[in-house]
Image 1 (tube, rainbow, N blue to C red):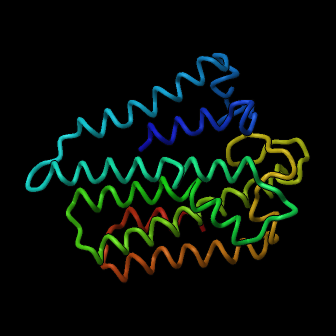
Image 2: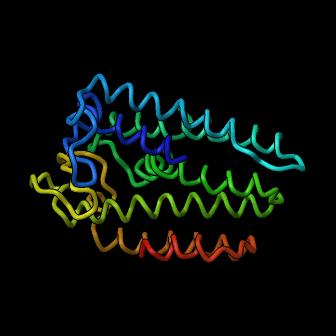
Amino acid sequence: VEFIHAYSLVHDDLPCMDDDDLRRGKLACHRAFGEDMALLAGDSLLTMAFEAMAGADVPPPAGRERKIRVIGEMARLAGPAGLIGGQVLDITYSPENATAESLFQLMLRKTGALITGAVRAGAIVAGAPAAALKAATLYGENLGLAFQVRDDLDDFQGGKARGEGRPGPAKGRLRPAGEPNFAAFIGREKAGERLAQLVDAALAALDKGRLRSPLLRLLALSLK
């Protein structure tokens, strides 16, 4: 999952996408090594992700079937139905035609898909029953949305969403005005309220599905 995540960041920073010079306070891959190497690095990371999943030792019973199912799920969520589809919505984003719902769909696919996939993968490999898997999915979707709203709030407060030309606190990246930002769209106060609702919904999904995971609970609470 982290290979897929890293590949998406390398490609996201390319001039043909977000055209970012910095990633996590350091030069973006294409700035440090060139666009050609960044493109190949991203391709390699994506390929290695499926190599790692195919070679994973998932114990019986039903280990092989569960592993195949996870690989299919991750392929779907990393592809046009998920991450890549979200990136398409991102680069074709039009502030004039944007709605809160369209922004949520963008966030659910570009950010939420991979987070949901990670949570579902663990549940599938563990042999979770249908009700628990549904709860894990709801948790992942709400966590993914909450993560992006939190990130947008940090960007907005740091000036990036207003195009003021200075890095925000989250990643040290510059984002030009007009790019998707939920906090800029509905306002900081309302975005904060929505963030709290999403975190609460994620926690409620854990409780409803009786998923007793201190780590998943902590991940959600860390976004408030």
